[in-house]
Length: 147
Image 1 (tube, rainbow, N blue to C red):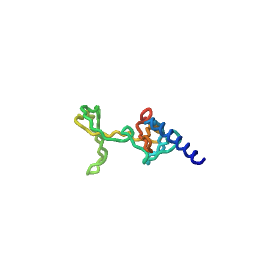
Image 2 (tube, helix red, strand yellow; image 1 turned 180 degrees about the vertical axis):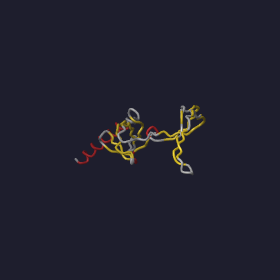
Image 3 (tube, rainbow, N blue to C red; image 1 turned 90 degrees about the vertical axis):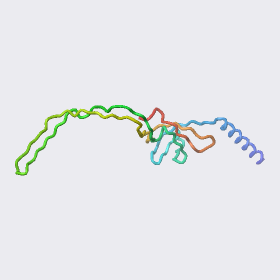
Image 4 (cartoon, rainbow, N blue to C red; image 1 turned 90 degrees about the horizontal axis):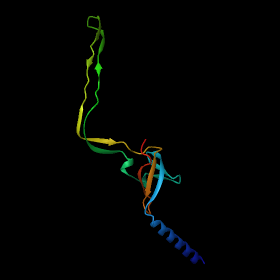
C-alpha cells in the first residue's frame, strides 16, 4: 500500500511540475523594505534579499552619455559690494561700489556624461518576474514610476 501512495504522490508532483512548466513567466508585485542591503517583500508572502534579485537598469543608478547644445539661464542680474573698516591710519572707511549688470550665461555643448539616480528606495512598489523553476527574481521596474 505504501508503494501505491508514493506512486500517487509522484504522479501528482509530476502533474504539478508539468503545469508550472507551461507557465514560463510568473509575475509578482513587491515593496522595498530596505535599500542597503536590498530587501523586497513579495506579495506579503516572502522577503527576498540581494542574492535572489536581478536588477534591471530601470531600478539602478547608471551613467549615460548624452549630446547637448544649450545656453544656461541668465544669472546675477545686478551686484554691488560694500567694504567697512579702517585704513592704515585708523580712519574709518565705508565704500560701496555702484551696481553693475553682470547678466551672463554659459554655453553647454557636446557629448556629456550624466548620472541617472534611479536606485530603489524604501517604500517603492515594484514588479518582479520569477525565473522559471528558479529562485531568482528580476526586478523590472517600479509601479507608477519613481516619485
